Amino acid sequence: MNIEELFDAVRPVTHGNAKPLQFRRVPCETLDIDGTPVHGDCIECVSHKPNGRGYAQLRVGGKNLRLHRFVWEQVNGPIPDGHEIDHRCRNRACVNLKHLQLLTEKEHELKTAIERQLFEEHEDREAAMVFMHLNPEVARKAVAKLFNAGVSTVGKWKREWKARRAFRESLSERVSQ
Ligand SMILES: [Zn+2]
Image 1 (tube, rainbow, N blue to C red):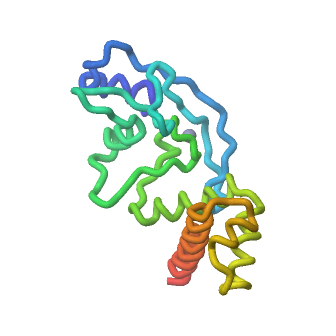
Image 2 (image 1 turned 90 degrees about the horizontal axis):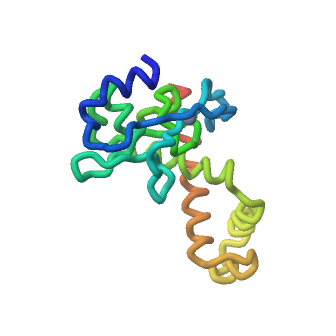
């Protein structure tokens, strides 16, 4: 089933929308965080404005519906409790089913933390983490000043760094099982 057929199939559910849904294909050359290529184009909604966080959404029956979750559920059934839909392509506007995967909330949180470090990170963060590791007695406030960042930012860096380590460990456990 391609995306156009999918939306034909679900149109009765979305009939509250005055505007018909329209999509565009955008070439995707992304690697998932494990290095696996993400195949196929991203499919982005162009008829409806994304929400403030960049997720494609539309309003149905007075509720905001995030399109990627909606599309996934049309094909796979309701998202199980404690689970979320992850974008392998890291494009929040994308509704290509091949780019979406079901993860537990914890897995999703950790994956997002890793992605931030891998794809949005500055060298400052790694340097600050190494510095803190080697100099555990130095207060976070001093580290923040040294690396020209806020104290809460340094706290966030540290949490994400720990999350990345935990995620790597959990992956290697799974592989060895
Ligand atoms: Zn995509």
